[in-house]
Image (cartoon, rainbow, N blue to C red; front, side, top):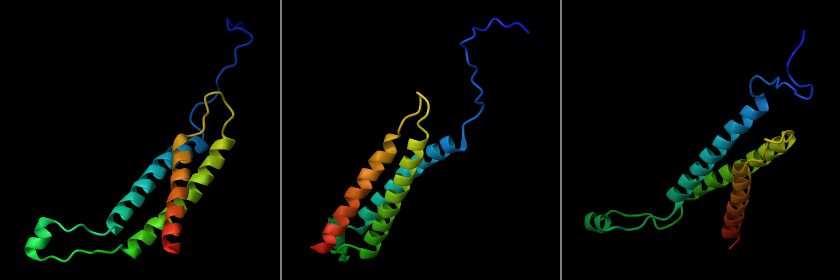
Length: 126
């Protein structure tokens, strides 16, 4: 049958996103959630600051780092490093079209987790 479409026109046959694209979307959200959890564990592991009410009511405050919460933050950082590296690998395999791009959130989380791991290990070596 005759068509008015030009010969060089290629119809886009993609109907819905590929599973890999869905994975990358979910993974980029998961990376930020994990990074937020690391920050919460780190904040809770810090020594507490004595306030006026603590002195007034005679409440003892913790003056040392909480090692269990700090270790949990370290394990989350190691998981984040592996998860980000795996997601960057999958994202690099997906770069086939002009609109595909490497997601910056994976790179930021990879660099941040490496820096956090180095700081944690350096703190324990001293």
